[in-house]
Length: 88
View (cartoon, rainbow, N blue to C red):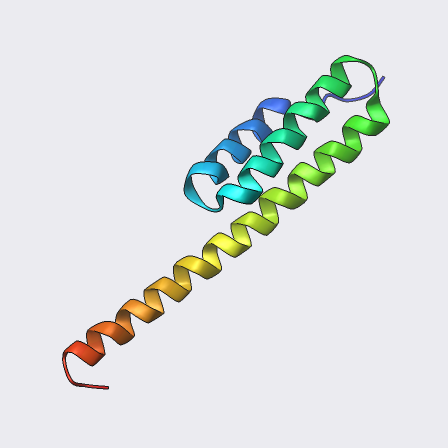
């Protein structure tokens, strides 16, 4: 008997990423999570595992890209403030 990979967790994470971190990888993760759940319900456990793995990778990559973008935006805004104040 295969263990259910907790569809709800990956669906929520992909939707969170879609709205908060990175829209492109959020959509990819959402599609893979839905496809994996459909494969799981159809009894295609190997394909489901592969698609869940792709969803996880998309979520991690999107989170990393999102964090890097937020850090870059923060640093650039600090530089802009310093330039406006004449300190740089």
